[in-house]
Amino acid sequence: MLAPAEGGLLDLLESSQRPCVLLKVPRKQGKLTLLCDAKTDGSFLVHHFLSFYLKANCKVCFVALIQSFSHYNIVGQKLGVSLTTARERGQLVFLEGLKSSVDVFFRSQEEPHPLQFLREANTGNLQPLFEFVREALKPGDNAEAAWRCPVLLVDDLSVLLSLGVGAVAVLDFIHYCRATVCCELKGNIVTLVHDSGDAEDEENDVLLNGLSHQSHLILRAEGLATGFCRDVHGQLRILWRRPSQLTAQRDRSLTYQYKIQDKSVSFFAKGMSPAVL
Amino acid sequence: MAAAATSCGPRAGAPGCVVAAAGKDSVTSFQRRGPRASGPDGGCRRLASIAGTRPSVRNGQLLVSTGLPALDQLLGGGLAVGTLLLIEEDKYNIYSPLLFKYFLAEGIINGHTLLVASAKEDPAEILQELPAPLLNDNCKKEVDEDVCSHKTPESNIKMKIAWRYQLLPKMEKKEKNVLRIGIQNLGSPLWGDDICCTENCNNSQSLTKFLYVLRGLLRTSLSACIITVPTHLIQNKAVIARVTNLSDTVVGLESFIGSERETNPLYQEYHGLIHVRQIPRLNNLIGDVSDVKDLAFKLRRKLFTIERLHLPPDLSDTVSRSGKQDLAEPTKLLGPGCGVTAGGKKHLDF
Image (cartoon, rainbow over all chains, first blue to last red; front, side, top):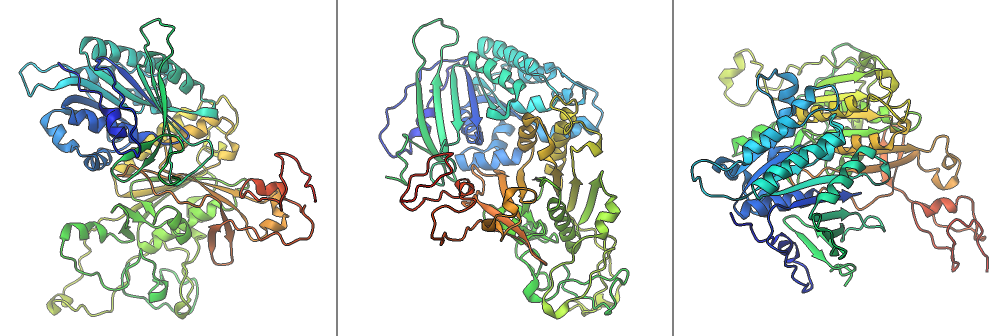
């Protein structure tokens, strides 16, 4: 199975105003990409990766815990993909957290439900969720439209802490997913975690630090240090890492500022916003 | 909102008597000006014809009014159906109950169903004290407080269509209606939680789980919810951050009562500040964020206004005036030609 060209970053840069260096990311598989947002909303990155992988013909399992299906669908249509079509074709397996939580809570389930931990008192176990992911991404027996590498997308992991799952249980879940999706199936994982900043959320910090050390690529969306700006919505720090290699070489990192528009996001170098030039 | 207007007798407090704001001038965009216009596309009209709702001009999202036109404007036209509005209470809980009541009163005027939950007051008493709607001068009549059981008034207007049907009894068609949910002081010790009592609280997860499942219910139904939370009492900042992330819209009230700003002549125009902490991104990559970040509110006799914080110009002869350090937060005021050092209180007078 071929990995798609990680042209996601190329897409991000295509509408920037200046001819930036084309970032050639090696075509690796089995990568864990960590999306992180601090003092801003990084959901635009989730929408980007979802549409990117669907367009690249990958099989996607999307654990969407924050918003409804129609929200992602409408934004996806603006970015050029139809989630409804993808779901019907079998390319997209969508777990709608908000709707399922109501089902889990109010209706008795015979079989284990992926969000079963909602019914448990504390420190829930995410094993049913992992079984769901594994079942969704396992290669089909018949040659059903050979999808490219499988992708697990989670939006987001921080909310699991609010739902009674401990940080260690979430890290275990990601560990199991990596073993299956990244190593066994040679797929990718993309997940979003909030950075609580000065809110001193210790559980969240444990989760964030643990994931940062395992990730190959970290995209961190931050608010501007100077505060709100109408033309520059924030700053994106991109960090490439090599978690498995013990190397003294410094990890490569870049910083861009961005502005989110109706159907796209434009990136530019710091201070190079078209509004100020 | 029915076009018919009942005329109540001049006696106030008559039970079961409701005045609909029928004057054209007082009708907001959430209330219809005339008989329901028949549109060509039935589907869209079905949704938009739910009383008290209108589609957003920006993205077609169905909105309901919060009861305060100024707050509606801040939120981009109104509160989206299916979302949760969290109000961070002001310190002495004087102004947040007002926003709560405006929301409920608006629901009654529009004929929405209400669900009110409060640990502090009896919900029936809350409903007794709802503010009257703003009417224009022509029909200033008292609205009876006990309006939660009001029915659509019998229309005396002759039906223009199909005169034959006029003789048949009116069939109450079960139409879709919006449910407004109001929960007051959630998280306060009155609910039995210890979130406001200690930093290492045990109940924070039940609160966050509740908010999550509530939002799931809201998304799958035609409802809108307002919750007030005493965040100034919550000692654990992480809980506040999680509660904020689990809500859609978050608005914080900061009253001047008890602070030095209460007596500061610069702020005498206002009663407090209002902070829009979070605006949701619904069906969009970006939300409707207002440019103005310094907003203040004032409770006038009839109206709760929200406006841009405006400080009067400095016309005094001397450079220093009381509260000048205050200005560093909302507006950066440049002293006349001097560099103001951070934290320094003295102003060099050249």
